[in-house]
Length: 98
Image 1 (tube, rainbow, N blue to C red):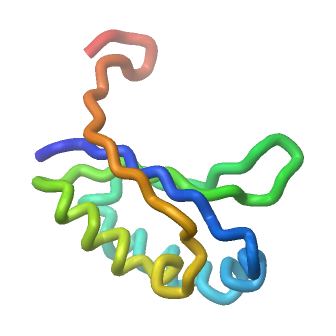
Image 2: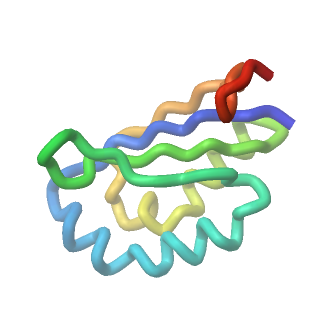
Image 3: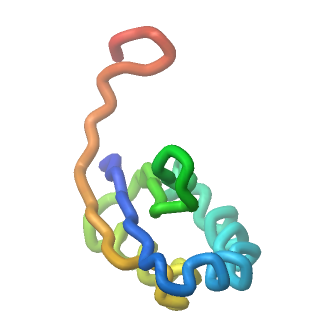
């Protein structure tokens, strides 16, 4: 398995309304895909509303990451302005080198 960092930037037009309507479905999606999406959460700038999101995903291929991104209700609703996917090699955790 390969670890990927997935960085989302949100389209701010109608973002609040989309989040409000689709958040329960987004959370259900994350829970249903917990075996692959290891951690997830929103990104914001100091004092600003949500600016995007970050996932750490463990799957076989970048194509599998792309499928997850496109299955997310936030993607289908048009919340996401852009997505960047990077392979990620964890070398440090909980105060220790791995």
